[in-house]
Length: 303
Image (cartoon, rainbow, N blue to C red; front, top):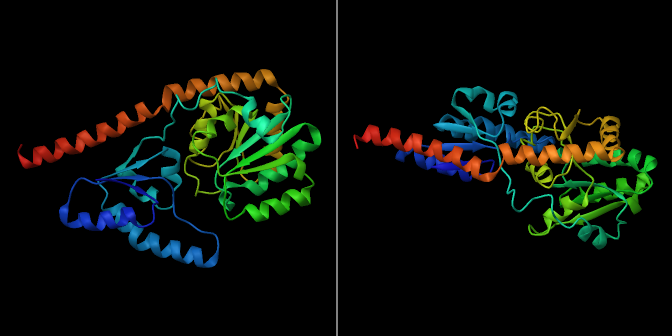
């Protein structure tokens, strides 16, 4: 059995059912369950101490997407003896550098010579979008034809729209909302730099940065565990401290003002995902784990 968490109670129900069946149980652990507000913090604490503990205790092996996140995770670091690192992957045929750069720019009314900063993800507190908006306000003052596109929806959207108005950058920020899967690669193609400004352990990896790299785009990301391990040598990424709006702005400006650097980082990013993160390579690692436990079960059965 292979389950994923956090998926609300699905993996937990499977684990409970498997207490009787005792089949080999592999768990992919994407990130901790944690909330910042009072009620949410109480619920997550109760879950982690009961169901979360049961789930981790009864997993034969736990897949973490990065070693750094496993070590820093408040829940997972107690089970490192069970952890095997298998990263997330990206479809390098769907996301690639040879896509129409102007398709989304024309749709949004953005000039072909403008500088575009892109965010893709849920509009929620842990994603750090408030800090991105403040950083972009700095960028917008220094580059007159810079624009920010936010792809995604979430509970923070009304707050973000108010911040945009307050900062005086309403004409420079586009809320693209939900984007269909087939359209998403063209948003990456439209940008000059992709930003992942996440601020908490709720972000365990950041698949979107793989998608941006696969499209040949330079990335700015925070140096939180998990996210920063995707490109530890910063071949295609500039890492900045979470919530540091000045550092975030400076990193974005560094890329937007240096076309040669941006091109080099884009090439490096594509090469990196081709070497480490294509789905085919990731799937083969998981299949090896399946085979290992099937062979163990066969030996135990005497077959």
